[in-house]
Amino acid sequence: MSENAANNNNNNIMEKNQAICKEAIVSELQKKKVHLFYCLECEELARNIASESDHITLQSINWRSFADGFPNLFINNAHEIRGQHVAFLASFSSPAVIFEQISVIYLLPRLFVASFTLVLPFFPTGSFERMEEEGDVATAFTMARIVSNIPISRGGPTSIIVAFPDDGAWKRFHKLLDQYPTVVCTKVREGDKRIVRLKEGNPAGCHVVIVDDLVQSGGTLIECQMMFYEKVLAAHGAAKVSAYVTHGVFPKSSWERFTHKNNGSEEAFAYFWITDSCPQTVKSIGNKAPFEVLSLAGSIAGALQI
Image 1 (cartoon, one colour):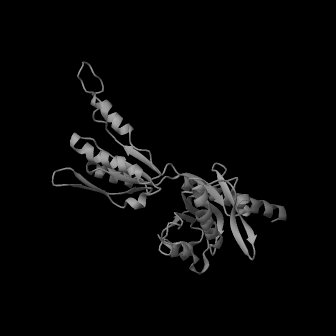
Image 2: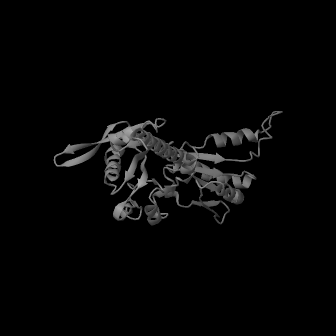
Image 3: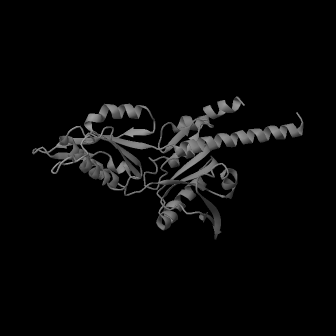
């Protein structure tokens, strides 16, 4: 093989690797993970909905009553849905169940969730929306007003912003992720130390996803993470921090420093996405949070068909 042919082949491999990396990153960032609550009548439908997608997680509510018959409700694991997308599957089949469901529907958006969606498959009073003579009560209009006044999510929508840990990562990936707003970090020397600083961009109110090609000890990622939480969070209000790294090398089990078990504070990575390019790492990590493994199988199979 000539030198030019070898160089062209290497360039083609690099372009395919970049395309695979872009597909994995964009695919995961575009997926919306939803916590789905439901009323008792809709339990079967809710389970069927969750079975259709790995990104829908069922949550539960204790639907109890006091001795006088009024609702005594409790939303389980309420602290876990902060900053998350939440939905409620409702059924207004009779006036008796509407009050308890409205009570839940009005509370969920106030639990600092990123977004709230009400799913009401059937609007039961929709057939009585006209007042034909004086004295008629348009109950459909009343119900519409109740539903329209659901509080806005206190956390507000969380947008994704891509963070590059250094200029090298920016040069490698910024053209692949130009559909997302970005921030760039840099290392500056302070005395004998090199400190990560925010070079450009504003992550205010966003879910910051740090993107790089590989990770070994993870020192740079942790420095970026701490910078966002200690500096950016206080100054600009970043919502949470996650990481995507194509190749999780992690020598000497260095991935353990990122697990929620070892870092149970609110400053842990919300998600840490890697691919299965390093099989031994994938085997060691298993299903330990915050790690999620994205398979390259489909992308590689597609590249082989070219």
